Image (cartoon, rainbow, N blue to C red; front, side):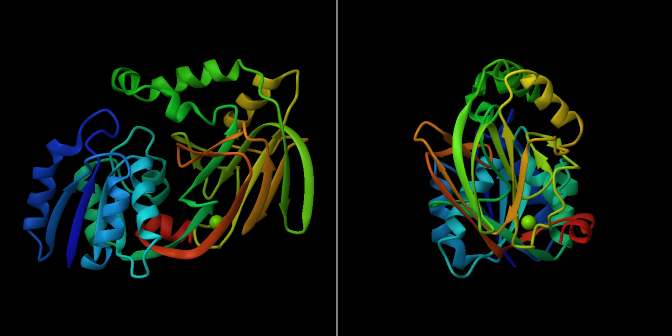
Length: 299
Ligand SMILES: [Mg+2]
């Protein structure tokens, strides 16, 4: 089979470059062919994914959630998609964790060479595709607010510091959500939409029960409370994403959210757009490598 390794030299704390020799070595012991492409600039991997899709059986994507998101956006433009296999290389690595790919490079590649792909759902927010998360309000912008320099120095802790700072601000905005023939106008402080139970490097085991191939996405809308604001959010995370009284939870394959232009949306940890959004789930849209355990539990 023909593999193309796509990597982003600036994901996470270390460059992936120094691991390439090991990847080459492991592939040299197989029958497979391996080509390598290093991202030259933002969105380069998206363009390359579209361009090179028909030439390969598998895309090995090394990097963080943003890198994988780029490649997925490129692949959603083409009919014939290669299998995606993720090699964790970022800071939070939510996508890799959700797919059950080990952090250890050797183990990750071993799993990728052994497992058959599963068809995973891909979601779309307006023109932008995403894999696992869509959010606005409090905590939603820390993933792109934290500077490279801080990530390099503090790693995951850099996000925790930024989260603590953001929790001190009083978020308040209105939106209208339409789904499942319901239409509600709400005042909220955070919207969190997830395809799985993982976000920001954390597992929210009580957030949802959905599968990665059921064609459904889940949104939690956190009503704004003036008092106990921080307490409520911290308690949400500590209790593994359990629904608190007064908050709303929606499960559907389509959502329409109308919001002001100053409401910013984040998908898969990156800024995506502002204002009103349409969300749609494309069921079983992409072949992807997952661990045996994830295939059993989440598919
Ligand atoms: Mg689902």
